[in-house]
Length: 396
Image (tube, rainbow, N blue to C red; front, side):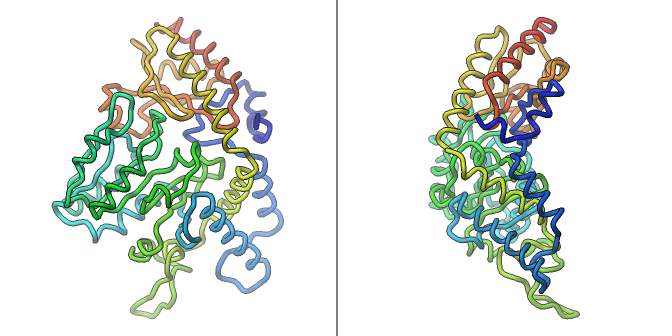
């Protein structure tokens, strides 16, 4: 339906490639390419620091994207949006910024569903501060077990870090309920929205989370850009974690004072072209009927689930709620399967998906993942299943 809005898909088709790895990175709409071309060909300038007209124009466009992001995720104000160089950087910013608030014996709640980006910073924080990681249990379907999870919140709980949508299982998690429990116990909440923001409408105030993180490149935007949302008063309680130009108010030989959020966290020249490109992607997404997109993805998801379930020896991991599914095949290594699919022009993800603890929890060495975008079509899955049957005939 929206296939033609993404020029790369025609180029990939001409090479015989069917792209089914959108959870890793999404293809880009023509609107993004035009925005990049316009900025880079009509005159680049730095932001926030020059007094001439071109720089003022670029700064205005850059800051307009902050307004657009705030509106897109339901933030209360624009100053709650921080631009980072990736979602991973945003999580590390939080882990270092919150370090002084974590003490020996404190507990950090995580789930085994977490991508390493929302695990390793907290794991390392716990090690530095003598805190303890507490693991939220998940059900066989791949959802956090709320009945069991509620008992794990205690007066020692200082932080909850949880994914909104698993990048492996495609399962939506009860984030609102978990954030409410965290608040009731005086704990901060951090939500990994890298997949959730793509496949659902997000309202951070309705989720009642303290911090929310996502990547631009998964949301049909550019790479090299992450977004951190934080409640304004909480962001201003965090110390800067990188130092340099533009994040300062005053510098002497012996001391410095720093900007309020968000600029205190945007040291140096920010990813200007990426921010302008994200603004174009968000403008494109606003032209779409989000309910129609959701219905389209739901139909594709059902087609994918049904097709996998019809094949002997194929087992889906969890019960996906969104447009991605991971699966294993009895007696077949995921890397061998992915190679045979690639030889037939099918691009899927194979491995542990930056989620080693989840693989250990599931008792598998790895899996094959098929992930869809709003531009995916039923014909893409038909080609995938043809290639899968050919591969299984060789491997099983």
